[in-house]
Image (cartoon, rainbow, N blue to C red):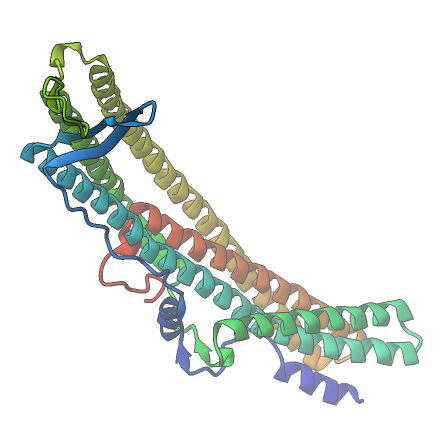
Length: 398
């Protein structure tokens, strides 16, 4: 191959920040992923029908298998209307807690959709840049092969390039296979409206001041309500005077002097119920523990928000530095390319190709850093709960 043809091939594949000719907007992909996430089956809320009898049992007792002395007893514990209402009220509070936990499933689906979207972006951009890298490697392989024929280089350099080409090809194939699992037509994904790092930088500043933890407060209120209902139920139960009523029958027999029927009643003395006092004290301690845990969680979340905010700022600063560095390097390479046109030697072409390989690798690292920033960004929004606002929107879209 002539030097002129090789130079022409190189300039055709000369790199920049490349975008494939794609048609499907990534926002469409986001909601497709969100809709395709499986939703676990949820059973209907249980219900309870209370009666005025708290418990009932039938007992029988025999005396040496003499049926004339057989004893039968029916015992039941009555339940007040107030006690029944308290049971239903406690169940309603527990249903609310279960409903709160089920609502978290929608958040898990949103998190999974963002994870998948960031992975798709990383792989898509990696394919684009590695295609460019592959083209440069092909040209460099031709340069080294030409220099081997001219005995101007060692064959080890040519073999190393061949190995690099194979490795990049495998990486591209792996990314394409992974993308196909997310979308039936991954090449149609367009990232043109993806938020920039500058967008993220401006948005996190305003988001921090509006950070909230409503779900933590909501969960605290639900747990407090459950404890209050349990305490109320325990108090009502401790004040119930009648423990049980029992009806006895002995016989059958014909002895009129022997008692056939009897009624037994047992009564509770509220001032002598230590078990109930202990239970109520434990519930009150649980209330204090719950409030202490809530305050601790608040501090942890606030600290997590601030740490995530600072990490994002640091990553953005590194990105801006790397981006500026790549732009300067691109200008230097362009200047060398202009000089190359006046002195097109194989040695110069090899040097330019190696510089472009270095430049592409820097751009790959830059895209990886951007993907990391976007990943940290949506996770930061998750800690502030703005990610889960209704209706659901794609926060990675401009």
